[in-house]
Amino acid sequence: MSRIRSAATFDRRTFLTATGAAGAATGLGLAFGVGPDRQAQAATVTSGPAPAAPAPVQAPAVPRTPYTRGTTLAGVSAPRGSGGYRRLTDGPAWKRVVRSDLAAAHGGRDGRRTALASFVQFTDLHLVDVQSPLRYEYLRAETASAWRPQEALSVAGVVSLIERVNALPGGPATGAPLSFVMTTGDNTDNNSKLELEWFLTAMSGGRITPNSGDPRRYEGVQDSGLKLYWQPESALRDADKQVGFPRLDGFLDAAIRTVHSPGLRLPWYSTVGNHDSLPGGCYAPGDPFWAEFATGDRKLETLPAAEAAKVWKAVKDGLDPRGADFKRLLTSHAKQTRQVTPDERRAPFTRAEYLRAHLDPAHTGPGPHGHGYTSADLAANRLYYTFRISDDVLGISLDTTDPGGHYTGSVGDAQLRWLERTLKGNEKGEKAHVLVFSHHTSKTMNNTRTDPAHPHERRHTGAELVEVLSAHPSVVGWINGHSHKNEILAHDGFWEISTASHIDFPQLARVIELVDNHDGTLSLFTTLIESAAPHRTDFDDLSQTGLAALYRELSFNAPKARTDLAGTAGDRNVELLLKRR
Image (cartoon, rainbow, N blue to C red; front, side, top):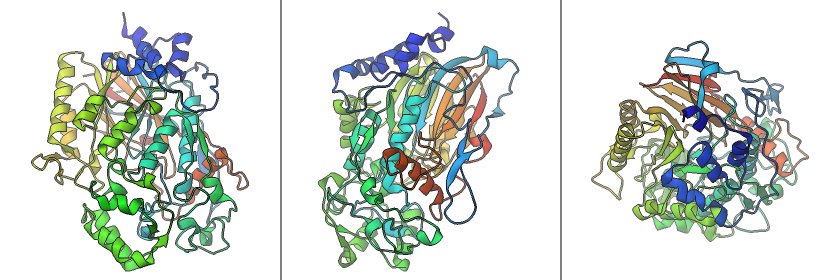
């Protein structure tokens, strides 16, 4: 049997099976090959409790390819007007660019190519409990990432992104069924149990109330009366209103209102990021102080400028990886804190709790059970794994967070040796193409701080990981996030694809398709997508959809936010050629 039939030739029944929420994992076993190591997980999908989700809708029609609708190939949100707060509208498309850094583009390949894989990447969703006492919003004057005006709407924004993926009829370049979604880390913002519950419910389907503390009202910096933050329901001329941000009565009540997620139609897999593993995204876990402060009744909302600058320098430069100085600061400013309603659900989660939550049948959704993780991973306290993407493609998910602290990454000796064994075993056996997934990029893996649980283990940088991947001809792509920026790099023999976040503008995800051109080359097609929310907002529309649109517009207008995160044309919608080695 040819690879064309097993990976690219799909009749309508196979396509509807692959894209329907019920039995999706089983359908993908036929279409792209789940593989024997994960078949048992996929088989459990229909036996778990059904997610609380809206009534199912008809699967999208099989597309004529190539297609553009619903992607940035058709249009992208863009600002209108100039100066101050700018409204978004429908903007021009981002065209597809062919990159031949690693191989020449041969004519006629459009008519020869075979689809080997077709899937979606989410990254840096940062579902955030904006009322948590452990957040450091008071560093906003030092860095735009400490607090964003749009953050209270992160759940509505992510659900709208899920709605977009559910409506896609297949890969925009090939029309092949989308077989799964991979999240490449920072699914949560502050290593919070409550944020983890929101993420898993959003992905698998159900109701989410994005509120903590007092169930009746919001308690956070946006009702603090402080000029440092946008006060949406106040007449106060705060810093954001001074640059044009609107007054929106009812905003905070709407922001904590229950959101309904349909859940993904597709199976999905999870990769861990530093904000998932470390309190604050940067402090070594395990200290009981983090849980005590996060679940307590005191919240610090303001800090003198000199102290804020000192704290941010320590965070940025990794000078306080265990948070000793940060703890002293919180303790010394106890009298300046605001009293809030305590909430045990805000406690940081451990690695074991992260794994158990993924393995909970209540969160299986369309599968696979565990979303890449298994009971063996739980027993070994391990957050890296392999999974079968198709008959011809193997996926490898890495854990690049350094447990010693700081937001940059690395991998330990044990994981690197496992990776090398996995790549060598594949090349001796199946000889499948390999796609590697991680949170950190090659440029942001420079943290070789010792892992407290493995003090004698050496940590390895991004440059070292590139060297390992380049040594194995089966590796065709390394897909990651963390930087919140679209950037695509050509390495020796493979492409590194970094995708922008879904919390900072332009709020994107990426469809990725791997094809064999049958001329000695492969192509990786990448197509960026926005959420399903309309580009134009209506300040009077505080519905779930209206909030998702506002989430995008606020992110565009966030003061001091970076304007380069969309990347260049060569980092967006591209065809990436490489030699079939």
